[in-house]
Amino acid sequence: MPSLIKPNLKYENDYFKAAADLVKEVPYYAKSYPLGDLAGQIKRWEELEEAGQAYRFWLVDGKKYLGTLLLRRDPLSPEGQVHYSINPAERNKGYGTLILKLGLEKARELNFASVIITCKETNIASRKIIEANGGLFLDKEQKMGEAEELTILRYQIKL
Image (cartoon, rainbow, N blue to C red; front, side, top):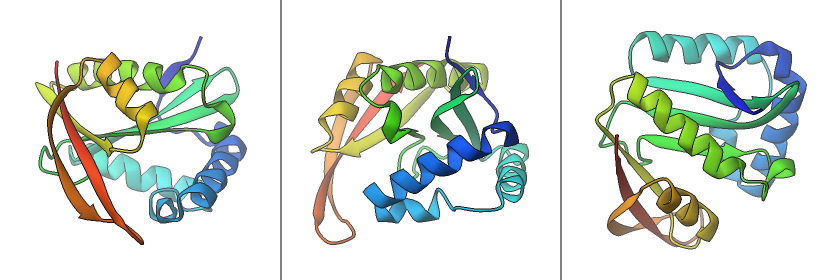
């Protein structure tokens, strides 16, 4: 049964393969998923957690890395308070809905009253995942992306 854990070196190979695939798909993810020095990255993530700024979890099943979930304290973060990504090799298996569901449980444990979550208007899969987890549409805004203007949808989920 998949579960959320703290990032762990035992999943290093799976994580880096998934990160490389994500960066190929979405080049600006290179900042969020740097390839190399996982021990150093985990240390930085732990420092953010100790400061109460952000909490990172991995969805794993046995020895398999399935995805990443990030919770941010700042409700005004332009990227929203929740970010999740699923290993491209593991998509379309229900893991997106599951990682958000489990992430919302973690947010409750961390005393979040609600979370803001965003997605591109064109990302139908994320819209369905957010709405299936109780996301209430707030608004949309136009943003300049890497090469084009994007419409970003904002949702709120009360916990």
